[in-house]
Image 1 (cartoon, rainbow, N blue to C red):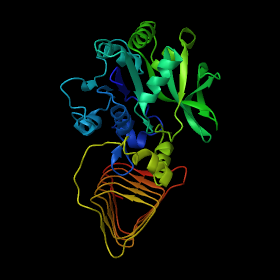
Image 2: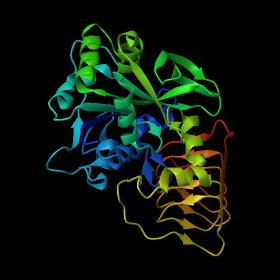
Image 3: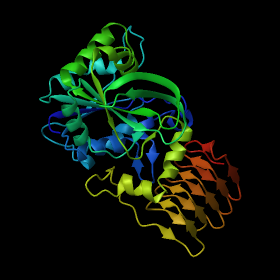
Image 4: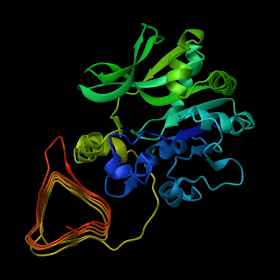
Length: 369
């Protein structure tokens, strides 16, 4: 994989997740107690042997920059290659939105590298994959472009790019759908191709008025390229809505999902290291099927929930089917069910908050209830 340069696109739309991503990139959202969504894209590339990675910065980039920093935690603080931040295009009279403008402005990152291929990855997907297998598949397929897809285990709402393939794995149809049905082949936001092919698509599409790499570059010009499809058979979650974020976090409580994502010794998921004291479980604590990060103090009841670092759960408080981000304070006697609390939320004594299983109640950052 040393012949591949990586680009991580951090421009997922926040339209369906505004409460949590109003001032941070979707990819910077906390996940599974101690991680961020972007950790998966970074870790997958590093674990596959890639040494050069460019991070295409979103409009709200502070949280991303604070989390990734020099890339040291992913072994990307290197003298050669390593981590490169790709800034947004300089504002001008061109009012087009979408990722194509920023890719066009940063084309020299790929073209001036000493690599042969580019791997473009959407950073808002949760999965653990070895990209070495994708490169081998691409070489054997003799295709111009390889897209990675997964077969959806259930019906899901939200815009998704779906494909149809022939028996030899060549894409015969590529289209955007408003939702996806069970057993449909859905692209999971990763594309491998030679750098000249990538540069041609970006340059020609942008200079002809295109806005989006996938929609305007790949889909509309699919007939010009031989596209192969590599199937990722493991767990995949696309964090493109509040519901998807909520479900993906709770999926981690399933042993098979946790084991696949985090227990592979050869493909660990790395994150920014924070040294915290161990969790304190007091005599009155009851915890069932939950993930509790370091630095927490638990005096109440926690069931089927994700608890991030430094959270306090008071005596007689009940937290069920919830996601509580860093430094939340759930005071004595409070009760939360199907709730997402952003950072530094205080729920005062004996307050009750309840959302629906498919529509969690959201408390935004720094709010006191």
